[in-house]
Length: 202
Image 1: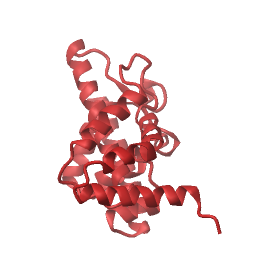
Image 2 (image 1 turned 135 degrees about the vertical axis):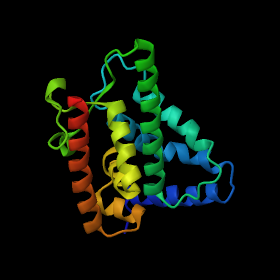
Image 3 (image 1 turned 180 degrees about the vertical axis):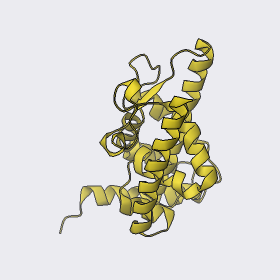
Image 4 (image 1 turned 60 degrees about the vertical axis):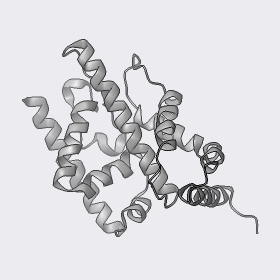
């Protein structure tokens, strides 16, 4: 029986991540061609709904995230899901850093907006911004508050939305059951909806 190409790729990714964790300095060079398309997909998700004037494009975001990944020396990579979750977190931080810099330059000008996909749009609407557009900086601040309350809830949002992992994949990364991820995901969306609504009214 012929092995599924995606399964073969995932196996190669896992092996190279293990090698990188073991100190193999060339492993990440071999890893990049295997994960580049996955990272591009993540970058497109992270930039979904961004204004066309945003200075970062998916390719640039991938490159910035990869530079940060390649500088990591203490991470013990577990598997593809762990790698993508880390990449998603880095992309989020890069975007927020850029958004904050633009806000400072504009001295209170219009904030960088992020439009959520259908999975979050129904729970995180912003009528004043035209549907599901959300202030990226406000979202990041809300996520940080959520993380201070329960770090797993913030991680669940990062894995499900920013990394695009399924419930089962997120459960594997978090080391919990799928039912727990479903509960956390539902609670986190509702909490963020309330936090962002209150913030827009203040």
